Length: 472
Image 1 (tube, rainbow, N blue to C red):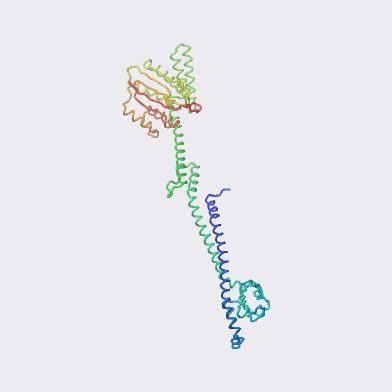
Image 2: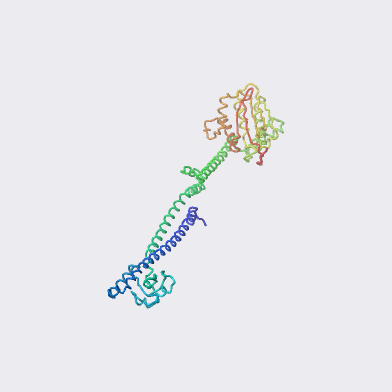
């Protein structure tokens, strides 16, 4: 069952706030009610005790002779109702329970006043039930007259103030619960708002919309702000990774296209070259056999090797086949010198990273060269990297241009407008981009002058075996 964290907060805060408030209010109500009840009884007790002094005047014979029974009755009623309020009844008796006077003979007949006389205390109170109405009896003993004054009053009349306080307390409890609930809702909404926004952002990203960011501008920075920043970084890295993967595929296809753009049907050309090689061997023409065999191996590598990564050994075989074709073409005007440390031959690289650079030597370095040309390929391991340096003895390039190209290569400016670049430059930038996308920004291509003459291109690769194991 899914429950929003917002409502979890509301439930938790309600338990932690509303329940204690209710408990405190109930306890306070009970304590206050009990205290108020005791104060009311105590106050009425004092009033009855003070009023009991009037009994001395009533007992006075002179006073009794001067007053008629009707006048005495009025005095008694006034005494009862002034002491305890409306609905009160009074019973006056001596210490033996003999009735002196009462405002309600039926009540007196019930002998409810005898409990006061039997008590050892001179004043006090107790509860009685008369005509199915609960009444409180408050009594006081007059030591001068030896009479007991007992006043019976319905409890609801005595504690009507308590009923009012009950209603007031209930109203206060309800108001406090409403206010606290509203505050809990507002606080929970405020606390969970970043979580809901982040959740909605994640749901939209799941649908493929990566152009979204979690909330970054906040009034107070907290853990949710840190999570939002980390989430944005993860999304940006994911977006960049997807772009890199997409561009890597484009670059790989582009490199393959550049290597195969003259290929009409690789199977047909491969079979044709094999046929030419067979005829050349039969006719004993080794140069044609070597040329056709090298071309056949090149087409096989281009057309039938679908692996994303290959060992440097296979890439070097492809370069040597290409050089065999070109050296036959230039008929001894160009020489090659290859020196590769066997340790790096099993290290991993992407396809088509060396042949485009070697091709640049023939396109630029040897285009108008009069003297004999030389291509040197030197492979070695240095400081945890596999380096392959391809050098020529051509006219080279001025230092300013080398710096400009290296700056672009170091910047990894693979989003540049390649439509304005020459094919040879596309090859260099393409190789650099694919290496960096495959292995990271610590790897790629760099140019430097070749002394005493020419240009060197250094390809930096990781020391990783084809199985993906890091070589240390």
